[in-house]
Image (tube, rainbow over all chains, first blue to last red; front, side, top):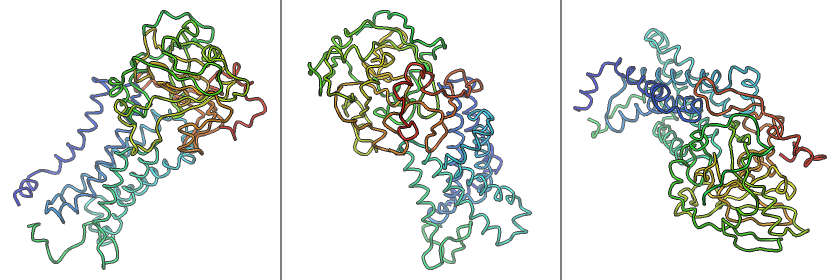
Length: 212
Length: 269
């Protein structure tokens, strides 16, 4: 497939570079453009949203290969690490610019604002994934690595619900995100194989003809 | 309708008002979209002239009042008020308005009236979110107890920064109740009903455990999903928007706390 031959020529570092683009746009908007009336919320929410793009984008890689024959597996680690980077920035901005380093209120808010706990849950789920994202860990953990990295389903789900729950009324965009998440999870359920396959999407003996 | 240069008021705060741009580009006005920038973008198409306000219920002189007639109720004043949103952000806004009590007195409130109900315009052709699928039952409605409505701090505003109210800010006529969370200050008012029963209010109807009828600003009573102890003052850029303590009744306790003496403000949030 010509598309895949094209992708094969794209170096992975180009994906990391592309991952920086949303951040660059945001910095550009804050420094040179119109930061708006509430730049803190703009920055905080944008970082969270971009993290979701990359989290769900990462989840789309396996189905893209299975159902459309588009192979982006080489870029999956980059996509995941970029997502984790934006999650980190999102948390840092929340604690510094939004909460103003008010430890007390930040901690009590965590408790009260249940959707914040979901966000924290997503971060906790991502930590072992980042920690085992290097080649050495992949080799050492073997099949367990794939099992461990199913945690990304948990992280993405918590992230999307965290995003919906903080709205006063869930917007159409919110429902769309939930729908896409459900779809990306649903296509992983293979009847008769007992639920979710490994993070690689499972090795299929028979390829779909249209995927060639 | 042009707004005359309003007189200063002792009820104004000394705090510096937010920039007009902040006030008019950061709005919750769900009729025009759920995003803060949506109202500024979409409210332009709303036609606010002609405008009538129906005054109904337990009044001596019910009927449809033209906007100019409504505005004749009392001389326009500048009221620089703190504005605290239930979402824990705040601004300082220089409204032009007059006490709601002046209009209610002209309408002749009957002794049996105990509450005042307010209703926003329902016009889906110009308010794009007024659809069945939006998750909100339209039109937007709000309400006050009669003594709250008659309080001198409670105003009907028709201007901002000495100019007519922009559409996204609730043109041509909106309520402003500065000691309550912003959602009580209903926009684009078309109907005012005096009643003897506590009227339904939109946010309370939607999420009663999160939004009460009273909705007085209260740092001691948290929203179920977030703390109300502090607020972020909008404006000033990315690194200077400070988090400041929230004051009981938004700092208007001296004027209004007596309205609630003997009431449990935890139960009546």
